[in-house]
Length: 116
Image (cartoon, rainbow, N blue to C red; front, side, top):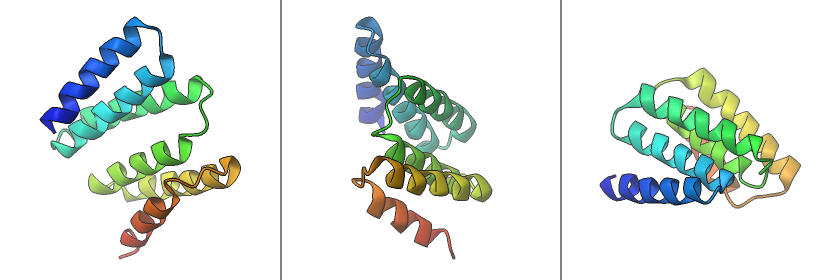
């Protein structure tokens, strides 16, 4: 996790300095994911939400399936199953709307693991 934290800090600083709003948002989401992996769920989910909202605000729709799926996985890991199911549904809807299927298999894999 240390590498993810360090790299996302560098990327966040660079993207912020150069006004790259999408990458700033994406790095916030990555940082939040990393915090959750370290057991800092409340802080991590809050950062992921902020990054997700900022990414949506940039108009970037191509990555929504992956970002929704990452949020769903994180919700599942911290035991927020209702939110995980809603976000999985959003992820699969985003796949259908955007046609971006690069994260679809992982989304279905996680959905199957949540049915236990």
